[in-house]
Image 1 (cartoon, chains in turn red, cyan):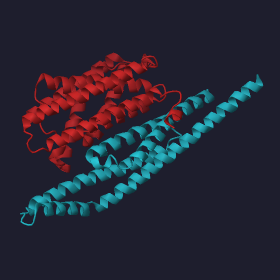
Image 2 (image 1 turned 135 degrees about the horizontal axis):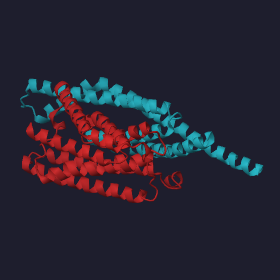
Image 3 (image 1 turned 120 degrees about the vertical axis):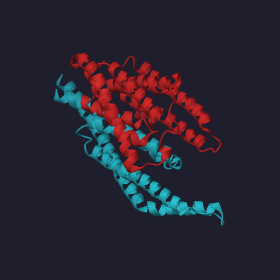
Image 4 (image 1 turned 30 degrees about the vertical axis):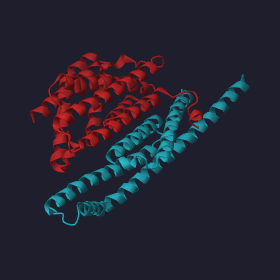
Length: 228
Length: 169
Protein backbone atom coordinates (compact mmCIF):
# COMPACT_ATOMS: atom_id res chain seq x y z
CA UNK A 1 0.00 0.00 0.00
CA UNK A 2 2.83 2.35 0.91
CA UNK A 3 4.73 1.48 -2.26
CA UNK A 4 1.70 2.18 -4.45
CA UNK A 5 0.82 5.37 -2.62
CA UNK A 6 4.24 6.88 -3.20
CA UNK A 7 5.14 5.40 -6.56
CA UNK A 8 7.22 8.06 -8.27
CA UNK A 9 9.07 9.00 -5.12
CA UNK A 10 8.44 11.40 -2.30
CA UNK A 11 8.33 15.09 -3.06
CA UNK A 12 11.03 17.29 -1.43
CA UNK A 13 8.33 18.67 0.89
CA UNK A 14 7.45 15.18 2.13
CA UNK A 15 11.13 14.33 2.52
CA UNK A 16 11.42 17.46 4.64
CA UNK A 17 8.43 16.45 6.79
CA UNK A 18 9.89 12.94 7.12
CA UNK A 19 13.17 14.45 8.34
CA UNK A 20 11.19 16.59 10.81
CA UNK A 21 9.41 13.45 12.07
CA UNK A 22 12.72 11.57 12.41
CA UNK A 23 14.23 14.46 14.41
CA UNK A 24 11.09 14.52 16.56
CA UNK A 25 11.30 10.79 17.29
CA UNK A 26 14.97 11.21 18.29
CA UNK A 27 14.02 14.02 20.66
CA UNK A 28 11.13 11.93 22.05
CA UNK A 29 13.38 8.95 22.81
CA UNK A 30 16.08 11.07 24.45
CA UNK A 31 13.45 13.11 26.29
CA UNK A 32 11.94 9.97 27.82
CA UNK A 33 15.42 8.73 28.69
CA UNK A 34 16.28 12.08 30.28
CA UNK A 35 13.10 12.05 32.41
CA UNK A 36 14.02 8.55 33.53
CA UNK A 37 17.53 9.66 34.53
CA UNK A 38 16.18 12.76 36.28
CA UNK A 39 13.70 10.79 38.34
CA UNK A 40 16.40 8.59 39.81
CA UNK A 41 16.86 9.73 43.40
CA UNK A 42 20.62 9.16 43.25
CA UNK A 43 21.25 11.62 40.39
CA UNK A 44 23.11 14.67 41.70
CA UNK A 45 23.33 17.98 39.84
CA UNK A 46 26.86 17.41 38.43
CA UNK A 47 26.06 13.92 37.15
CA UNK A 48 22.77 15.18 35.69
CA UNK A 49 24.56 17.99 33.85
CA UNK A 50 27.11 15.52 32.37
CA UNK A 51 24.35 13.12 31.34
CA UNK A 52 22.33 15.99 29.83
CA UNK A 53 25.33 17.05 27.75
CA UNK A 54 25.79 13.51 26.40
CA UNK A 55 22.09 13.23 25.55
CA UNK A 56 22.00 16.61 23.81
CA UNK A 57 25.21 15.75 21.92
CA UNK A 58 23.67 12.47 20.74
CA UNK A 59 20.48 14.21 19.58
CA UNK A 60 22.44 16.91 17.77
CA UNK A 61 24.74 14.45 16.00
CA UNK A 62 21.68 12.53 14.77
CA UNK A 63 19.86 15.73 13.74
CA UNK A 64 22.93 16.99 11.87
CA UNK A 65 23.21 13.65 10.05
CA UNK A 66 19.51 13.76 9.14
CA UNK A 67 19.74 17.31 7.78
CA UNK A 68 22.92 16.46 5.85
CA UNK A 69 21.17 13.42 4.44
CA UNK A 70 18.26 15.57 3.30
CA UNK A 71 20.66 18.13 1.79
CA UNK A 72 22.40 15.41 -0.22
CA UNK A 73 19.17 13.75 -1.35
CA UNK A 74 17.70 17.07 -2.47
CA UNK A 75 20.90 18.36 -4.10
CA UNK A 76 19.86 17.50 -7.62
CA UNK A 77 16.17 18.38 -7.15
CA UNK A 78 16.56 21.60 -5.18
CA UNK A 79 15.24 24.67 -6.97
CA UNK A 80 16.93 27.85 -5.88
CA UNK A 81 14.43 30.46 -4.75
CA UNK A 82 14.54 33.44 -7.11
CA UNK A 83 16.46 36.13 -5.23
CA UNK A 84 15.13 39.05 -7.28
CA UNK A 85 13.11 40.40 -4.33
CA UNK A 86 16.01 40.05 -1.90
CA UNK A 87 17.33 43.10 -0.09
CA UNK A 88 20.33 41.72 1.79
CA UNK A 89 21.55 45.10 3.06
CA UNK A 90 18.19 45.83 4.68
CA UNK A 91 18.16 42.32 6.13
CA UNK A 92 21.61 42.72 7.73
CA UNK A 93 20.65 46.14 9.12
CA UNK A 94 17.61 44.52 10.75
CA UNK A 95 19.65 41.75 12.40
CA UNK A 96 20.40 43.63 15.64
CA UNK A 97 16.94 45.16 16.21
CA UNK A 98 15.26 41.86 15.29
CA UNK A 99 17.47 39.97 17.74
CA UNK A 100 16.45 42.45 20.44
CA UNK A 101 12.76 42.13 19.62
CA UNK A 102 12.99 38.32 19.52
CA UNK A 103 14.67 38.23 22.92
CA UNK A 104 12.21 40.69 24.40
CA UNK A 105 9.20 38.69 23.22
CA UNK A 106 10.78 35.45 24.46
CA UNK A 107 11.60 36.83 27.92
CA UNK A 108 8.20 38.51 28.41
CA UNK A 109 6.33 35.41 27.22
CA UNK A 110 8.14 33.07 29.61
CA UNK A 111 7.85 35.57 32.47
CA UNK A 112 4.06 35.72 31.96
CA UNK A 113 3.88 31.95 31.60
CA UNK A 114 5.74 31.34 34.84
CA UNK A 115 4.20 34.17 36.89
CA UNK A 116 0.56 33.90 35.94
CA UNK A 117 0.14 30.31 34.89
CA UNK A 118 2.59 28.99 37.47
CA UNK A 119 3.65 25.90 35.63
CA UNK A 120 5.23 23.17 37.73
CA UNK A 121 8.97 23.57 38.15
CA UNK A 122 9.79 20.25 36.44
CA UNK A 123 8.94 21.88 33.11
CA UNK A 124 11.87 24.24 33.54
CA UNK A 125 15.40 23.21 32.68
CA UNK A 126 16.73 21.42 35.72
CA UNK A 127 20.10 23.11 35.63
CA UNK A 128 20.99 26.14 33.51
CA UNK A 129 23.65 25.49 30.92
CA UNK A 130 27.01 26.64 32.26
CA UNK A 131 29.26 29.11 30.43
CA UNK A 132 31.58 26.71 28.60
CA UNK A 133 32.70 25.70 25.11
CA UNK A 134 30.30 22.75 25.33
CA UNK A 135 27.37 25.10 25.86
CA UNK A 136 28.52 27.40 23.06
CA UNK A 137 28.66 24.52 20.59
CA UNK A 138 25.63 22.49 21.75
CA UNK A 139 23.20 25.30 22.59
CA UNK A 140 24.32 28.17 20.35
CA UNK A 141 26.32 27.11 17.27
CA UNK A 142 24.80 23.78 16.27
CA UNK A 143 21.13 24.75 16.64
CA UNK A 144 21.70 28.03 14.77
CA UNK A 145 23.46 26.29 11.87
CA UNK A 146 21.49 23.06 11.54
CA UNK A 147 18.03 24.46 12.29
CA UNK A 148 18.44 27.37 9.88
CA UNK A 149 19.78 25.09 7.13
CA UNK A 150 16.80 22.74 7.62
CA UNK A 151 13.91 25.18 8.17
CA UNK A 152 14.98 28.30 6.31
CA UNK A 153 16.92 26.67 3.46
CA UNK A 154 15.87 23.11 2.64
CA UNK A 155 12.21 23.19 3.72
CA UNK A 156 11.75 26.82 2.61
CA UNK A 157 13.20 26.15 -0.87
CA UNK A 158 11.10 22.97 -1.20
CA UNK A 159 7.87 24.87 -0.40
CA UNK A 160 8.38 28.15 -2.26
CA UNK A 161 7.71 26.79 -5.79
CA UNK A 162 4.35 25.44 -4.55
CA UNK A 163 3.10 28.07 -2.11
CA UNK A 164 3.17 31.84 -1.66
CA UNK A 165 5.88 33.41 0.52
CA UNK A 166 3.51 33.93 3.47
CA UNK A 167 2.27 30.32 3.31
CA UNK A 168 5.86 29.07 3.06
CA UNK A 169 6.89 31.13 6.09
CA UNK A 170 3.77 29.95 7.98
CA UNK A 171 4.58 26.27 7.36
CA UNK A 172 8.30 26.60 8.17
CA UNK A 173 7.62 28.55 11.37
CA UNK A 174 4.97 26.07 12.62
CA UNK A 175 7.34 23.18 11.83
CA UNK A 176 10.13 25.04 13.66
CA UNK A 177 7.92 25.55 16.73
CA UNK A 178 6.62 21.96 16.76
CA UNK A 179 10.20 20.63 16.48
CA UNK A 180 10.87 21.83 20.06
CA UNK A 181 8.88 19.01 21.65
CA UNK A 182 10.96 19.21 24.83
CA UNK A 183 9.54 22.68 25.53
CA UNK A 184 5.88 22.36 24.54
CA UNK A 185 4.74 25.48 26.43
CA UNK A 186 7.28 27.52 24.45
CA UNK A 187 5.88 26.45 21.08
CA UNK A 188 3.64 29.53 20.49
CA UNK A 189 6.52 31.96 20.98
CA UNK A 190 8.86 29.75 18.92
CA UNK A 191 6.36 29.83 16.04
CA UNK A 192 6.35 33.63 16.28
CA UNK A 193 10.17 33.78 16.33
CA UNK A 194 10.27 31.30 13.46
CA UNK A 195 8.05 33.54 11.36
CA UNK A 196 10.39 36.48 12.05
CA UNK A 197 13.33 34.38 10.90
CA UNK A 198 11.33 33.29 7.87
CA UNK A 199 10.69 36.88 6.80
CA UNK A 200 14.35 37.69 7.37
CA UNK A 201 15.25 34.77 5.10
CA UNK A 202 12.92 36.12 2.40
CA UNK A 203 14.31 39.64 2.77
CA UNK A 204 17.94 38.54 2.75
CA UNK A 205 17.69 35.88 0.07
CA UNK A 206 20.04 33.80 2.21
CA UNK A 207 20.09 32.15 5.65
CA UNK A 208 23.21 33.88 7.01
CA UNK A 209 21.37 36.73 8.79
CA UNK A 210 18.98 34.12 10.25
CA UNK A 211 21.91 32.04 11.52
CA UNK A 212 23.37 35.13 13.14
CA UNK A 213 20.08 36.15 14.83
CA UNK A 214 19.46 32.59 16.05
CA UNK A 215 23.01 32.29 17.43
CA UNK A 216 22.87 35.70 19.12
CA UNK A 217 19.48 34.92 20.65
CA UNK A 218 20.66 31.60 22.12
CA UNK A 219 23.88 33.15 23.50
CA UNK A 220 21.94 35.88 25.32
CA UNK A 221 19.40 33.35 26.67
CA UNK A 222 22.26 31.26 28.14
CA UNK A 223 23.82 34.39 29.68
CA UNK A 224 20.45 35.44 31.16
CA UNK A 225 19.84 31.93 32.56
CA UNK A 226 23.24 31.98 34.25
CA UNK A 227 22.70 35.47 35.61
CA UNK A 228 19.38 34.47 37.32
CA UNK B 1 -4.19 16.22 -33.51
CA UNK B 2 -7.67 16.88 -32.21
CA UNK B 3 -7.97 13.27 -31.11
CA UNK B 4 -4.67 13.29 -29.22
CA UNK B 5 -5.57 16.65 -27.58
CA UNK B 6 -8.94 15.43 -26.33
CA UNK B 7 -7.36 12.09 -25.37
CA UNK B 8 -4.67 13.75 -23.26
CA UNK B 9 -7.09 16.25 -21.69
CA UNK B 10 -9.43 13.34 -20.91
CA UNK B 11 -6.63 11.49 -19.15
CA UNK B 12 -5.58 14.75 -17.44
CA UNK B 13 -9.06 15.42 -16.14
CA UNK B 14 -9.32 11.80 -14.90
CA UNK B 15 -6.09 12.27 -12.95
CA UNK B 16 -7.24 15.66 -11.68
CA UNK B 17 -10.54 14.13 -10.63
CA UNK B 18 -8.67 11.40 -8.73
CA UNK B 19 -6.55 14.04 -6.99
CA UNK B 20 -9.69 15.98 -6.18
CA UNK B 21 -11.08 12.83 -4.57
CA UNK B 22 -7.95 12.42 -2.49
CA UNK B 23 -8.18 16.05 -1.40
CA UNK B 24 -11.78 15.40 -0.45
CA UNK B 25 -10.60 12.42 1.64
CA UNK B 26 -7.95 14.64 3.22
CA UNK B 27 -10.65 17.18 4.08
CA UNK B 28 -12.71 14.44 5.70
CA UNK B 29 -9.67 13.14 7.62
CA UNK B 30 -8.67 16.60 8.90
CA UNK B 31 -12.22 17.50 9.95
CA UNK B 32 -12.71 14.11 11.63
CA UNK B 33 -9.40 14.42 13.51
CA UNK B 34 -10.38 17.95 14.52
CA UNK B 35 -13.82 17.01 15.85
CA UNK B 36 -12.46 13.95 17.69
CA UNK B 37 -9.68 16.03 19.27
CA UNK B 38 -12.15 18.73 20.38
CA UNK B 39 -14.60 16.22 21.87
CA UNK B 40 -11.96 14.10 23.68
CA UNK B 41 -10.14 17.10 25.17
CA UNK B 42 -13.41 18.81 26.17
CA UNK B 43 -14.54 15.65 27.99
CA UNK B 44 -11.18 15.31 29.75
CA UNK B 45 -11.31 19.01 30.73
CA UNK B 46 -14.40 18.29 32.85
CA UNK B 47 -13.23 14.92 34.14
CA UNK B 48 -9.78 16.07 35.34
CA UNK B 49 -10.63 17.05 38.97
CA UNK B 50 -11.99 13.56 39.63
CA UNK B 51 -9.02 11.88 37.93
CA UNK B 52 -6.51 13.92 39.93
CA UNK B 53 -8.32 13.14 43.22
CA UNK B 54 -8.24 9.45 42.33
CA UNK B 55 -4.49 9.55 41.60
CA UNK B 56 -3.79 11.39 44.85
CA UNK B 57 -5.82 8.85 46.85
CA UNK B 58 -3.99 6.01 45.09
CA UNK B 59 -0.65 7.55 46.02
CA UNK B 60 -1.73 8.06 49.67
CA UNK B 61 -2.95 4.44 49.90
CA UNK B 62 0.40 3.27 48.47
CA UNK B 63 2.21 5.00 51.37
CA UNK B 64 0.55 2.61 53.82
CA UNK B 65 -1.93 2.98 56.71
CA UNK B 66 0.35 5.03 59.00
CA UNK B 67 1.28 7.67 56.41
CA UNK B 68 1.11 11.33 57.46
CA UNK B 69 -0.49 13.50 54.80
CA UNK B 70 0.39 17.20 54.54
CA UNK B 71 -2.98 18.54 53.39
CA UNK B 72 -1.61 21.96 52.40
CA UNK B 73 1.02 20.41 50.10
CA UNK B 74 -1.54 18.00 48.63
CA UNK B 75 -3.90 20.92 47.87
CA UNK B 76 -1.05 22.91 46.31
CA UNK B 77 -0.04 19.95 44.16
CA UNK B 78 -3.66 19.40 43.15
CA UNK B 79 -4.05 23.07 42.10
CA UNK B 80 -0.85 23.05 40.03
CA UNK B 81 -1.62 19.69 38.41
CA UNK B 82 -5.18 20.72 37.56
CA UNK B 83 -4.06 24.08 36.14
CA UNK B 84 -1.36 22.45 33.99
CA UNK B 85 -3.55 19.65 32.69
CA UNK B 86 -6.41 22.04 31.92
CA UNK B 87 -4.02 24.21 29.90
CA UNK B 88 -2.99 21.11 27.95
CA UNK B 89 -6.64 20.14 27.38
CA UNK B 90 -7.48 23.69 26.22
CA UNK B 91 -4.56 23.59 23.79
CA UNK B 92 -5.92 20.25 22.59
CA UNK B 93 -9.32 21.82 21.90
CA UNK B 94 -7.58 24.71 20.07
CA UNK B 95 -5.62 22.24 17.98
CA UNK B 96 -8.84 20.45 17.09
CA UNK B 97 -10.35 23.73 15.88
CA UNK B 98 -7.24 24.31 13.76
CA UNK B 99 -7.61 20.86 12.16
CA UNK B 100 -11.26 21.56 11.33
CA UNK B 101 -10.30 24.93 9.79
CA UNK B 102 -7.53 23.29 7.73
CA UNK B 103 -10.00 20.71 6.48
CA UNK B 104 -12.53 23.39 5.57
CA UNK B 105 -10.00 25.31 3.44
CA UNK B 106 -8.30 22.36 1.74
CA UNK B 107 -9.51 23.31 -1.74
CA UNK B 108 -8.63 27.00 -1.35
CA UNK B 109 -5.03 26.31 -0.25
CA UNK B 110 -4.33 22.62 -0.81
CA UNK B 111 -0.57 22.65 -0.19
CA UNK B 112 -0.71 24.91 2.89
CA UNK B 113 -3.55 23.00 4.58
CA UNK B 114 -2.32 19.46 3.88
CA UNK B 115 1.32 20.14 4.84
CA UNK B 116 0.29 22.03 8.00
CA UNK B 117 -2.17 19.27 8.88
CA UNK B 118 0.54 16.63 8.54
CA UNK B 119 3.13 18.63 10.51
CA UNK B 120 0.67 19.46 13.31
CA UNK B 121 -0.54 15.87 13.59
CA UNK B 122 2.97 14.38 13.73
CA UNK B 123 4.18 17.12 16.09
CA UNK B 124 1.19 16.77 18.43
CA UNK B 125 1.60 12.97 18.53
CA UNK B 126 5.25 13.39 19.55
CA UNK B 127 4.52 16.07 22.16
CA UNK B 128 1.67 14.14 23.78
CA UNK B 129 3.86 11.04 23.64
CA UNK B 130 6.54 12.85 25.64
CA UNK B 131 4.01 14.19 28.17
CA UNK B 132 2.25 10.86 28.55
CA UNK B 133 4.47 7.97 27.41
CA UNK B 134 1.64 5.42 27.85
CA UNK B 135 -0.21 7.12 24.97
CA UNK B 136 2.55 6.31 22.45
CA UNK B 137 1.41 2.74 21.90
CA UNK B 138 -2.30 3.56 22.02
CA UNK B 139 -3.91 3.45 18.58
CA UNK B 140 -0.54 3.20 16.82
CA UNK B 141 -2.04 1.56 13.71
CA UNK B 142 -4.67 4.30 13.36
CA UNK B 143 -2.01 6.97 13.83
CA UNK B 144 0.17 5.44 11.11
CA UNK B 145 -2.82 5.19 8.75
CA UNK B 146 -3.70 8.84 9.38
CA UNK B 147 -0.11 9.94 8.74
CA UNK B 148 0.08 7.94 5.49
CA UNK B 149 -3.30 9.37 4.45
CA UNK B 150 -2.17 12.94 5.13
CA UNK B 151 1.14 12.33 3.32
CA UNK B 152 -0.78 11.06 0.28
CA UNK B 153 -2.92 14.18 0.51
CA UNK B 154 0.21 16.37 0.35
CA UNK B 155 1.35 14.59 -2.83
CA UNK B 156 -2.11 15.00 -4.33
CA UNK B 157 -2.29 18.65 -3.31
CA UNK B 158 1.01 19.38 -5.05
CA UNK B 159 -0.09 17.68 -8.25
CA UNK B 160 -3.60 19.22 -8.05
CA UNK B 161 -2.21 22.71 -7.65
CA UNK B 162 0.29 22.22 -10.48
CA UNK B 163 -2.44 20.98 -12.80
CA UNK B 164 -4.84 23.75 -11.77
CA UNK B 165 -2.14 26.40 -12.47
CA UNK B 166 -1.46 24.83 -15.87
CA UNK B 167 -5.18 24.85 -16.74
CA UNK B 168 -5.62 28.47 -15.70
CA UNK B 169 -2.48 29.61 -17.63
